[in-house]
Amino acid sequence: AQKVTQAQTEISVVEKEDVTLDCVYETRDTTYYLFWYKQPPSGELVFLIRRNSFDEQNEISGRYSWNFQKSTSSFNFTITASQVVDSAVYFCALSAVNWVFGPGTRLSVLP
Amino acid sequence: KAGVTQTPRYLIKTRGQQVTLSCSPISGHRSVSWYQQTPGQGLQFLFEYFSETQRNKGNFPGRFSGRQFSNSRSEMNVSTLELGDSALYLCASTTGGYAGELFFGEGSRLTVL
Image 1 (tube, one colour):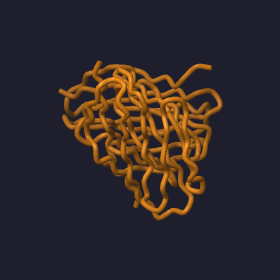
Image 2 (tube, chains in turn brown, cyan):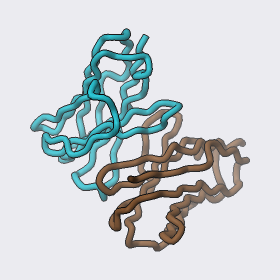
Image 3 (tube, chains in turn purple, red):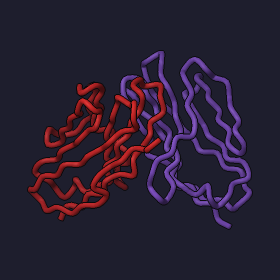
């Protein structure tokens, strides 16, 4: 069975603070894909990043960075110097034979 | 390139009625998946269609059904509505495999009274 856990339900930070969103997954598949999606208040989920199970290289894209560690089954997401526009619900997801989403972490960035 | 289009955006039904939601995927995308989003349960996978065939199904009762047409457009149907079916129903499309990113529509918000 596949499962995605996001232990942080809600996080509040002040603008310009760094924030890390945690994601832990479970799967028995050897080939799988991990994703992060952002759901702003407008409601439409937006794709942020994808990683496959064979690529543990961490990635940085502007203020966003991702840390994939297969040994701990984690795929964490860090926003550096957060901004008010980063306020949203962030979902971690796993796909192998279907898509499984975590419960989401609501991030509030206060001015 | 047009995005994923879902209709209707909002609807109100009463218990016992049925509802049909529509999803038009991005042109060229052959996979359409459906999700139910509620505050308590989060985003839950309903089913996925690929080339008119249901490829996967989540853990929902048989009242929830779907289909996909030859032009990849998809519909989902919920019969004998219950209060607990009130939710945002999201549709997503992708090119075909599970490696690809999902492109989501804005959703259909269903309220059951």
